[in-house]
Image (spheres, one colour):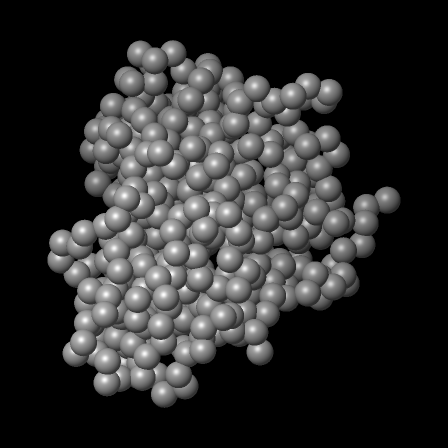
Length: 442
């Protein structure tokens, strides 16, 4: 059993002493943070629940069994608000032929048609969940490709896995299809039925600049209002500054006076707008109450890729500007070992580390850990996830890193993961378990 570096008492009642944790993720009154925003705490745990959060070295707790973290950083288990569990791990049998966005689209479409049976989807999705759990993820929102026959395959499998993983990872799902499919009433009825029968009151689509965009958005918003659904969009995943569907979504939200939650993913072209256009769009996004998630690793892999030419930009959205305007912002894993991203392991520690480098989150605000913790938990409506609170679950990622430069310099491969106060087995599944699914295309 691989449990990480920390020896956690089996009794379930103990104190984690001298723990550094982001002050903005602790619900314990006003806490002072160091220059990295970290505060030193003693965390008391009883029967899987946090019973006290006190300044480090509190004498009243010394009589209890203790584990001294020696200033190591602890995070709450993290929240991955944008993934594609159903696509995961198909790269060996269907790689992206050229690393481009269009290459990814065509490869996934071919693989979906040829291979995505209930068994295939289930095995790959569960493999991904096992990886995420071992790395310290508490909750995941996945997008499910929802076109044609796949609606009747992936959604029942998802519902089964959500029930089986309850108590380990909280799952949500949003349907994924191109905005032009909204014009088909039969398709929309099938989507609403799948979400109602198997889902989590979420509706979504991939938006792009088609002539019928506003009409389709009106249909989506009316459908969401009628059924009480929140909305989750893939938006402007391109380096074309003419792609401004994010602004159209904001206009539609304001037009319909939408009161549900809206999440917009990618929004890549926003960072390529002229300053006055960027400011106008961001203002509308804030007014409409839209949250934005950037997918830094996947978008740096796909965007601005041209054969024989060095990319000129990083593919990510204007996250700093959105945050400064008061828009809730996040980063997430996105794709894993599929034609949209050849790498990744659903490890949000890696996502935060690489996002810090790609988006230059350092030398900036000190609360960026919220982007993989409290903020996505709020978007997903998860009251107890992504933060540390008295009375909340003792769900923690424990590391030996004492500050952010130590934390980001290494992958924290020896981290200890606590779920309900107990260290879990962190052994990752072997890729060989997927070999039976991985026959290569001719």
